[in-house]
Length: 532
Ligand code: CA
Image (cartoon, rainbow, N blue to C red):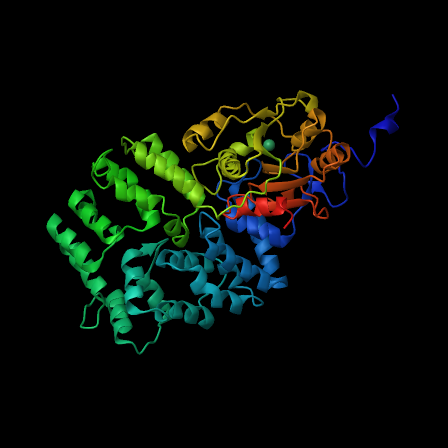
């Protein structure tokens, strides 16, 4: 055998470097490296809780914190703009990474001003302010600039809006509004704001105290269902403002539903409402709850993240809470409504009309939960593929893995994903959970299309980019597919973990790396496929 026949630029095993810009990924394969700005987006959107299959959570967190620190020094504008963008669009299912990054930026001289100026846009609720306060102490002390920024969080809003924040979100992570006011000492001329501060710090009520606070105080002292229901209607209290005893009462929930339960809270309270018998198949509050759940405008204005709906759908359909011992008999109408809400929570997608092969990496490393949520990377990928299937008429979906122990695509286990948007989400996820797992070869979709003579304009691969098992790199396999098919095929890589690797060649305009999970991903994919 001529050993020189084994070398070249068009075909390199993934365990060897095919391009000088590639680095060794955690799985022992070579992949391209994201720049800091792209890496930051992954971190802010996907988070690091739970780590990856290969990296412990702390290790992954430390790597991403390094990216934030570097950008705070070198490119503070991009850093803070990206934090604000991801936060304000509701692109991430959890706000912790954005608040952490902002807290870090608030401690680096080059970015302090920008970060503190962005505080009210990123910390929009009392809880988010507490999270920020906790994170910021990890990086710096309470200097004057920070105290002024926190103070203006309190003084820059109307008294009624502030009252809502302080009685709805009262403490978190060892922080309370009293703690923050004592640190920040905000000054204001507004009698209502002053009265609100007085109540927070000393617990005293006065003539100028906002009525919501009076309602909250009265609800804590009340013991009768009728009193709670009356206070809810009179002061438009939310469920968080009521004592636990009130929350087991149907009449109280009737009042809460009458004044309006916000979208995310409603999703989380569905098990409770079901247990209380308020969501029967016929009658009860079912029809109006269902109508609100699927209301696209409300989903968007409340910035409800699709992944949170996905988790809510599966939890609700299972009839058991993930943490507690709570059980309920799920209502079919509510389960279906959550299904519909999931698809509607994404930005409107215009189909590209291109021949699209959706390939979900179902390998073992994709079975880790992401963002600390009860959902694995491969389940989230499947759900994203379903959204694309629902909008792209000529799309088809496959799952790929290699047989355990194999290092060759000849042993590939690329198989059709028998999922459909007509299935219920929890059923579709079960299909993928039942698929066998093995090594990872992200080149398989292109190799398969080449071998089978498939006509594909757009490959979409959902993966953690920890590819190692193939004897050709994914970007080489795409180049070969283009040569052999004559189609200028594109590749979209949907990154599902907050690592710094991508199989996409950054210098190839026909390849795009996007962050999985972001509600804008389906429309980004079709726009790229259409050549925009
Ligand atoms: Ca893998």
